[in-house]
Image (cartoon, rainbow, N blue to C red; front, side):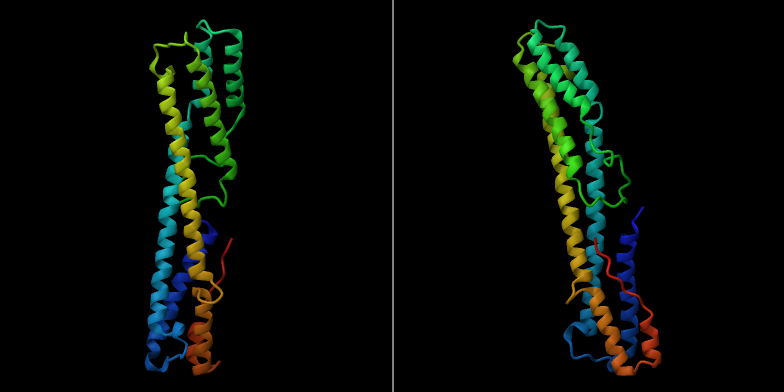
Length: 243
């Protein structure tokens, strides 16, 4: 579900189109000296705003998809860690080696990835920060890598089960790392997309909201405060929505 702020951004752009329709209807009478207020520039600004809104939606969907892929990849990692320790205990490994493996397993069991990283609908807005969850997944990978290193160094650890073999674990670690990195990359992309959208809509000098308010002032100056033309546009609302 789209957030109130996301709906607010879209409403600003939709209202700007309404403003353009009225300006178009004024014909040659609407003739501001400021270039940014001329009809072709207004139409271009609307198109740019539409593009930024669409880009945020695309980047947001990609972010949520990457989060879901990571959740799937990490599912079962804790139970796998326990199985690996159990498998090691059936070898000729020393008490010290088994103890090292158990240490990594305890860390694995005790580290919980952020609860905010649950499967999401692609339309759910990406969070404002992923730092905590990113660190949680980073540490889970490190714990599994540490445990795998212990197993690799133990010559008697040669399980027949493919998913418990060192080579399989190394491949899994690489996959987990790639999926974790993909989330970080996708988050950076959505964050940058939001910045671009906010610049287009809310820049204090060239933004859509500021431009819309100036257009309304120009219409008021040309037709008068009590004119039917100004009455058409004065009630069109434009709000600055930034986080």
